[in-house]
Length: 214
Image (cartoon, rainbow, N blue to C red; front, side):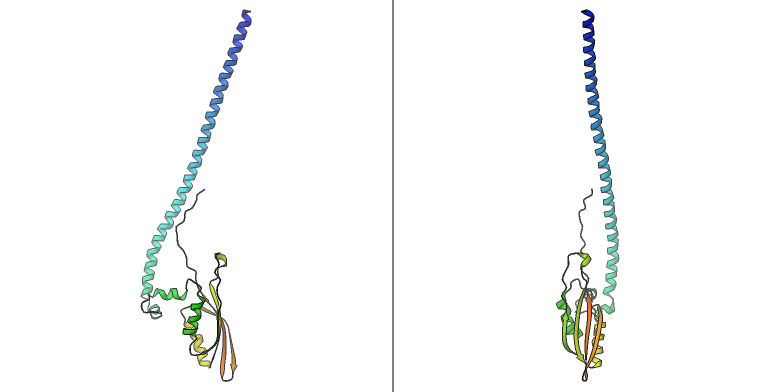
C-alpha cells in the first residue's frame, strides 16, 4: 500500500503543479493581451493626435496668410478710394468710390432694379416700346447657380438716338453683354430690338467651421 500511496501523492502533486502552471499561463496571457490592447490604443491615440496637430497647423497657416492678405486688401481699397474715374462714376456724392465696383457687379439678381436702371438711365431719349427683364430663380447648389440676367427691349427713334442708346449701354457701370441687335425701318424712324444680359456675383461668406478629424 505504501508504494501505491506514494504514487497517488506524486500524481496529485503533478495535477496541482499543472493547475498552478495553467493559472500562471492564463494570467500571463491575460496580462499580455491587456498590454497589447493598451499599446494599440496608445498608438491609435498618438496617430490621432498627430492628425489633429496637422490640421491645426493648416488652420494656423491659413489664418496667417489671411492676415497678411487683409493688409494688402486694405491698401488696395485705399487706392481705389482715390481713383478719379470711380469718383466721377459715383451714384451719390456720399458714396465711397469702391461702391461703384459693388454697383457694377451686385451680389443679388435684382431684376426690378435692373429694369428701373435701364428705363430711367440708359434708355433715355428714345421711345421705349417694350422692356422685359427675366427673373432669376435662386439655386442652393453652387454648380447650377446662375450669375446672369437676361433682358430684351425695343426702342424707336432716328439713327443718332439709337446709336446713343448703344453708347449708354457701353458706358454703364453695370457689365452688359449684348447678345443680338435687330434694326428695322418703320417710315422715317428706326426700331431697334436688343437682347442682352447683365451679370451679378453672389456674395461670398467667410466663416470659421469645426472639422471632425477621424
